[in-house]
Length: 482
Image 1 (cartoon, one colour):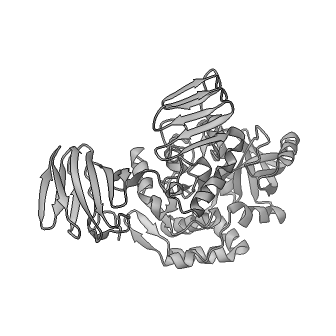
Image 2 (spheres, rainbow, N blue to C red; image 1 turned 90 degrees about the vertical axis):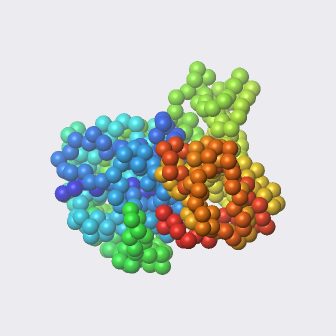
């Protein structure tokens, strides 16, 4: 029987705004080391010495992030053959159900290990030891979760109430589960910590695909049936499999904990278990967590970018744009991006989510995207904008090309500042070299391509009555966009 990693990469990470945005959430950010959280998750099974074959990972994400997933996977040489696209997130229980159906239909039954893409684990060998112990339990039809030994009375995490020890496997203690608690208040969290009977809920689960489907059908038939229908009516598009939207949205929005594990605990099911682990885990759920996990200087500050800190301690200061100077600051988080600055008390960073909700309600673009926007062909950065014009800096990656397109309400002027562009304009195709330019009149079909080995850099000036990204008519596209 195989061990099949399933990576859930659909989270929004709103508490890490302004760095994390809806179109570029935290799993795609480098918050601990050089690699992104997604990349570290994909590499987490490397070196696992186990008795079974470890399959290539299955990733579940949403439509907007599909090219980020493929690009970041390729950067760490992961063989990703299966990416399931959710039309809208419905929480972890439907995602795991879809993964279990997909596994059995395509490769037969297997032990699934489900991992969120936006967590950190620093002690990989210890995590591998826990995986091997959990694997033996899962092969015996247990549903297993990993509980993190709490280091503080954290109110931002869910908790698992452990019961009697079931057994020990290679030194790993395995306990029965009495129940689950979601994000307690401070006094309750302190009671949990002092009792020694509670673990943080890591959100990592392991079980046979067939066992999960049996439990979800019994306890949550609406989730079971909606996911099965969404798969049966879904469509394959290259690496991607798109779930059928109408069916999938009939599924209740529910987590693995609430939908199944909590109910099994209440029913005294003897086939659920938790393995206590101390593996350097964090869900990186707030800026205070980013400060916790990263290195600090002699004043207990974690600093990134161009920063001068005087009489400053216990702070996280991150600059992506220009110089930040602090004087007399303590216990603060300061994050500066191209289009937003956030300054917060380090103990209040859980409330960043409220700011994102306010931005969304006011329909401000800062909740959705950065000034720099990633596309499957590269990226663009909005340099300046006015009522009837917009200037962008386009980076087209080697071997990539934009769609063949036209615009009804704007014209464009392209200037090559680095590289060589292959330009299609109407019926002609020609090369543009550095310091050369061309004009694309309104309504004319056009395409930009980088056939070279180095990134192509273009300054694009748009002019017209409307400059929105939805003014695009596509005639041909390498990435399947309509």
